[in-house]
Length: 88
Image (tube, rainbow, N blue to C red; front, side, top):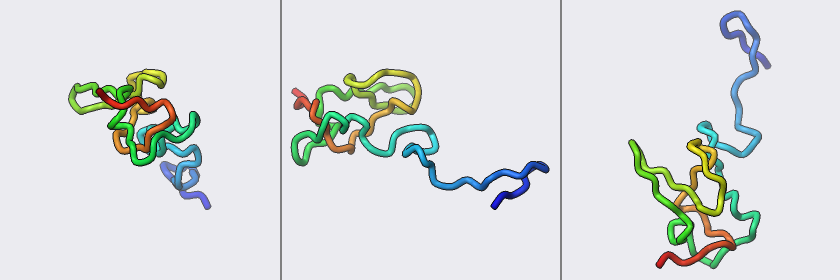
């Protein structure tokens, strides 16, 4: 069912079909394509996770592509992937 907005019929917003949040970030760890990591370990325990501090903290995984976009933000609480290396 459509609804008029400024005289134009548009479809109402529903859940995102592409598995991403409103800001474009992933809902689950995209690195799990390499397989699951050690049981009970999180990305926050991994040496590959980097913290960039500007106005807020942004976490990025060195094993993923980097951009200044939310699409490449990484979550500390995600389960670790097979590329997990214990933080020293």
